[in-house]
Image 1 (tube, rainbow, N blue to C red):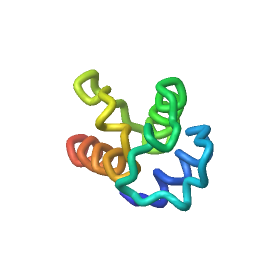
Image 2 (image 1 turned 90 degrees about the vertical axis):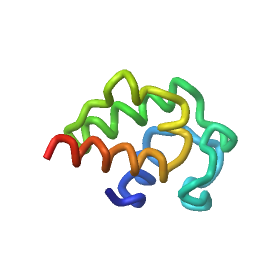
Image 3 (image 1 turned 90 degrees about the horizontal axis):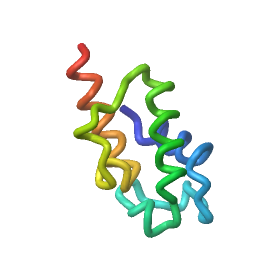
Image 4 (image 1 turned 45 degrees about the vertical axis):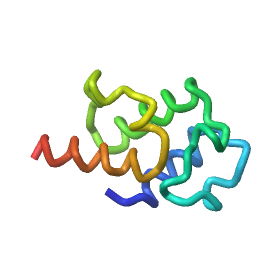
Length: 82
């Protein structure tokens, strides 16, 4: 999973008040201004883009707190589906 792919989704759906490209992969998106509602939009866009579904156990703030954590979660889900 490419952090660049996740970054593009966050840029399109995260409604962040800062430049997503200026954030490090491990930057806290909630501190950067993402809302809970926007994080749900990001989650849905990731599910659509990668044809995956986040299980209830992964629907936590920590999974969606950074580009790196979302990329790791997608990698985990894709490995499990393979």
